[in-house]
Image (cartoon, rainbow, N blue to C red; front, top):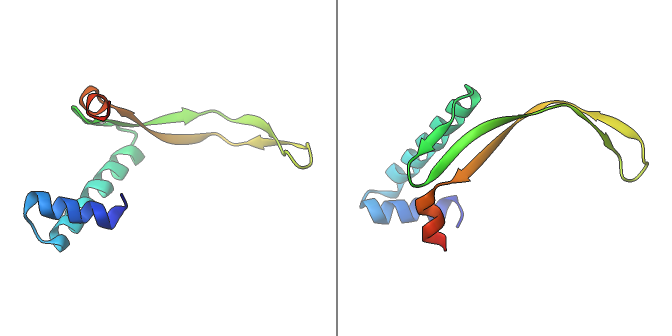
Length: 90
């Protein structure tokens, strides 16, 4: 399912126009992104948790040349599925 198919599903389920469903989806994505940028986690009970984890700097290797290189530290977004979502999928 891509974004436009998700918008269509939201519009049909909530009985709202596609334009309103698109704006609502964009607002949700923007809100989750903003919270993760601020270092917060977003918990949707039954669905899952969006969070940010820190990845420390490390040394890597270029597979073509075999040269070592430094990989800088980074923040990594993650998602952990909630119990209800896991049960619905299985």
